[in-house]
Length: 474
Image (tube, rainbow, N blue to C red; front, side, top):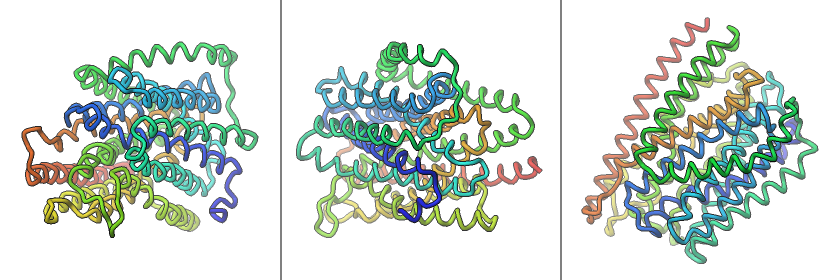
């Protein structure tokens, strides 16, 4: 790791470990949420899919607002501290949610905290590199390794939950973000800050908790009312798309071309995230119910499986970072769109493997865990071709005064992918009337195959869009 960090900004290790601990807390919650709803509160699959999808959608859409506030008023550093505060509070509320009454305010608080934290720590990393710095992609890939180290640690939450219960496990999520903020504070002297903020910044910071409380109250109702979420969020997506078009047309010809490419990446990423986030929804329930939880005599938990995807990130991330460095040095680095085409295709392969696994249950009707690990290996390759490359593209292609907001839009696209994930996850919902293992396997087989078809179709479309863009940009 020391050799990889050589020649990178001194701020990178502090941002790396801050993000690692924040992601630990987040993935503890995201990985256990659908299980918490179905097993602790006895929600149906469809209801759990809806809540998990709306939460995933809002938790990634909220960075659009957080990025905008950081650009115009708060600044990246202040937004990170406020976001951390609300994450600590949200995880603590979830830890004490012994009844359903506290679930929705807890999730709303987490959404607010994530909105201010997530886009701005990534934007801070982008400001540490020059625009023409060829190590930028490598730096973001290393940063992405930190994200996945946090996810790996969260994978052990299943053992903690089995031993100590849900409340202790969610309490550990709060401890993770507290540790992350301490690391961030200790590295402030190394983090460059080039933002120029208006005088209103200081007074707005004092009023921010009241505004956030009002937003949390609104989110509480949005998470409760399924029909409102199903209509309001897609409408918001259309509005955001129109906003992107208008914003692009307002730029100079040079930045107009850059934003055209960036917008193509943002829109196509929605489908990838809708598929990828099945790891925490439909695939999570599939693993919990129908996958053998022993491997070579070692007992496993459901959370270990989604954490395995992050183990693959840790193993493959340095290799990808090194590859982009070498290819960039020789001017052979593939374009971001080419990387996205391959990434979405790999996600499709992952779901082909999951679908095929349902054809080979053991004598107890359970699937070998090796099938799941193989599927998640393909999804990992897809993620490495999408997420760090997308983060890097935002900081490179967006005008400097719009980096925070465009980073927020990037995460908002992930959010709309989360909303779509909750909708398509219902294809894998098992009705209460289906009680046999064979019946459940048939439902998951069909759903996973449909997910694969969706990935392949989008990859083909994006390939031809890329050809058209090349001609247009020339």
